[in-house]
Length: 449
Image (cartoon, rainbow, N blue to C red; front, top):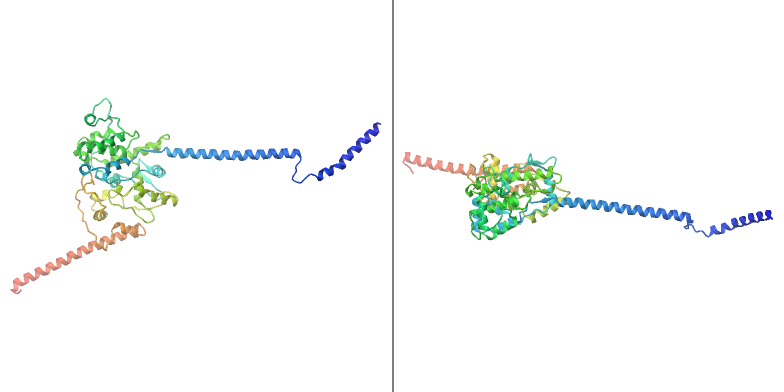
């Protein structure tokens, strides 16, 4: 019985083995055994997890980019000329004359300008060494920013008296502040917006010494040398106390010094996101000193008159589309103009005087009421020539010049032609005069007419 059972068991196992091929025939190539299916599902789940993980990594990177973008947007610029543009646009005749009388007539040319491209300003700030005042555009292009450059931009007084900012303590009464508190009802911690309202409403159409003082202080506090508090800076009260001496101060050097301070503080303090000073100076100098696509910007003074927000945008867009900042052609010997016009007696100074004169005849020259060196423009030892219709002015020559050397040659040739023609006319007149004189003397001797 036992043997039969064992044999029957073997037979049953053999029968099962015979039936297994039939079962295998029903298995399709795509069907996997249960164990393998489980393993495949695990792999699939692992693959899905890995894909999700990749997405999470991408999201983290995207968040980091957004953080970096937010950090860039936290680059706070306090140079805001918008309010000053609105005030200047509403000034009347008497007020304009008062502004010119204290040497700030160049500020009357500002209009429709604001800081628009933060990344350009940041790019320039990172390349401006405040200690050496060197602005480095590229490995081959760099220049020192001087007080003459500030004068080019705004035609501020560039006199001999140093502008010193002194702290106004709360417990110490200042004569001007006490008077202004009584007259206009403002406090020492006055915002720029409140001061703007006073300038627009308290003086009407008539200018006054107080208007001159407050206009200068507002221009400095909001645009030319702003502070981070967005409030009026009363540290310059001593410099505006005597209205007759305002034009004798070196306001250009003060604006440059405050820009240097703002840039150095921002660069040396890792946590600082605020930058004070007139950073728009760097942007305008960058555009003025670098030709773009062979085009030079207008150079009549003050340079601020040629720039508005709408004019900034096209050039910024073109430079970004071309690959970024710093690709223009550097005009090495053109700027600054003010130091040359103010008293240089060399050929370059003569040419710049001539250029300013020509620009003035075309309606875009230096304001007669603006200060050139701390006050009204003083006569200098120079000669001015008026160009004829067939002669090209400096801007036209710059447009057709292939490079700086070609430009210098064309300008020299033009100047020599003008001088030669003037001397030729004078020589012809002198010869004619000598002939007439000789004829007169000979008639007296001979008695013949």
